[in-house]
Length: 573
Figure (tube, rainbow, N blue to C red):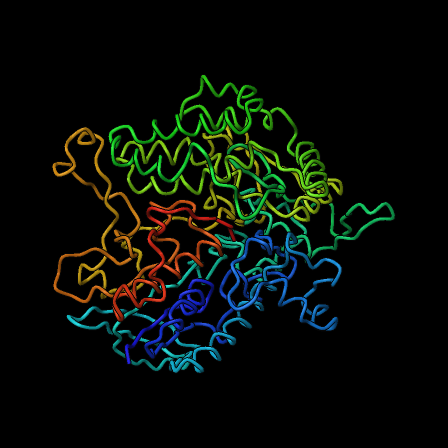
């Protein structure tokens, strides 16, 4: 039997397994999971998350494994739903659920895949409490070194290996008293007392940190008018300050048509043509397409922000301008009201939907940017797309507003010239903004998963063998040259081919696949979330089955594009 290893049993590992077991050729598949309970994934595991933390992907957007999330929930008894914290009346395709509910869903779906795999003649081994500590490429196979919970180590060789290790959170988060480099695991934050708390980041990760800390000090309850209120007996010193460069809160999830209506101007075909014909000014040409599409979809909004006079470097400022004139909580309240009314009336805001659909198509072009365009994209243009798609559940905004009304939450605008110092204080950290100091007895970095370098791969043999290197980008100076003369420079992440295999020239096995998010973000900045996990799993499973069976019999042969040159729905975790 072809022998395949999947490292990680979270969503990417599960969707990869789903694709593989569609093979008519019997396979031997081993799934390694460092935790004791395979299938839940780090972002949805109860040991990492407070039960009040919400996922920000609606049921309608979550790609089914064996069944949809809603169907799975509706099969539960009232008692089971109560344990999950899901009232039966809230189950619906456009609703959001606690992160731990998604963990239970994925674990259940993994069990369903195992039963299906056995029926199809596959041999599946799920190895819990097995942490992969090294990977070494041979000429014809790949050796995997594994450490068990008792410390014992073993080796096994495979024909194909998939790195689906997912999020990379540090094991120790409180690196000095009162200073946390991550909000996960959430239980670590329970030790924070009635003190001033700083949270770096105002996105869903920041909200997770706020919710975790505040639910350990009090509770959220509806008042007689149906308005969410926060109640606590904590001392007056207990106060949380969320902070970011712009000092803005994320917006509430907005109603739109799913599946998405195709774009008419900013299309895959148009983007692909620019990749081929305008490599020297690709980003600016794409911006012209972006501008044309937004004018076509919502001319009133385009005129309002002065889109006709904007450039790559100025469009984000215009996009955020209205929000920056308001107090963040006032804007959040107004935006939440609009979002609720639009959901009730099934009204789609045209400009929001336009940007949401375009970010998927734009992802095709990012790996083809020259060095200067890649820097400009990350610094100026990416921000508005991230803000548009990374909206949060309505309940998350309601909680922030309740905390603010209770006098327990504020937002601080950092700007670009601030300093963070945790060394000169006994606990927590100090933020200095132009000489104005803000001291926090507890400080949480909640900026989320960051892009990492190829040299951060946790498998030393891959680095020693030269099997991983940083992703390459054509330099600015040679962008006008013919393609065969273009000079390339290493800029970050892992250099991968179209099937997510590391590029190298040595005579070693090429059947290693990397779909670990931190190593993809440099060139695929929107590739976080469950929908991306599903597409990554499809791509890798297709590539493996094509290698085993040939293109005509591969279960994934219908996939003609991939995340390097395809649309992606980035439903962020």
